[in-house]
Amino acid sequence: MPGGGATHGRPPGDIGLVSVVAEGAVAAGVRRIEALTGHAARHRGNANTNIVTSAAGLLRSGPHDVLDRIEALQGQLKSAEKALADARQKLALGGGGEGGSASETVNGVTFVGRVVEGVAAKDIKSVVDAEKKRVGSGVVVMVLKGDDGKGTVAIGVTEDLTSRYAAGTLIKSATAALGGRGGGGRPDMAQGGGPDGSKADEAIAAIRALL
Image 1 (cartoon, rainbow, N blue to C red):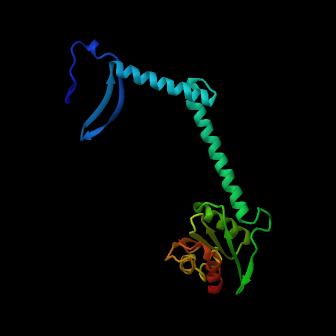
Image 2 (image 1 turned 90 degrees about the vertical axis):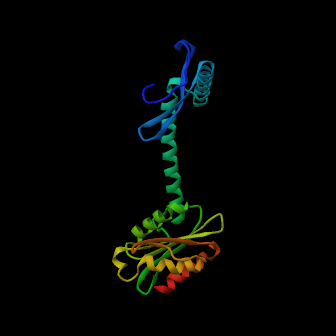
């Protein structure tokens, strides 16, 4: 093997079947290939064939259709996950009706404060965005009570109000109510959290007081 090394055999036929199991860089311009030969390679090939055959049985497809079937199932799973996230968002907004979450007027500003459950922390900003669009002008606070007892809060401020109320500033009071510190984001959207999700109502009250 030019520029490298190899395990030596007698006639090439002694090596027999070769099955590559790993390949990667070990130094600049040098790559390492690991392989099985002979009976070990054949055993590995038979094992892989059995795995594909079993997978085909579970997927109710032919062995050559396994990859296509997996890709199709991945697409279905992605669609189902999106539908579930949308359903949870509608539930967080009060069941998905036209009315959305109840709002109130505080110091001339529309304010929506809601404690939500069953929504993933990563999706809470989407819930706030949806409510901002519904109210048109206002401040929206959503506090998620997690299964672990922690609280996650997201605050959205519509563009027309960011000169008066910056979400990145408001969030600090909300996270403090949850026993946390700081939080961050843009003037129109911020997120933070704290260890005490039971203080969700206090977090909402803290923002209402700032308005």
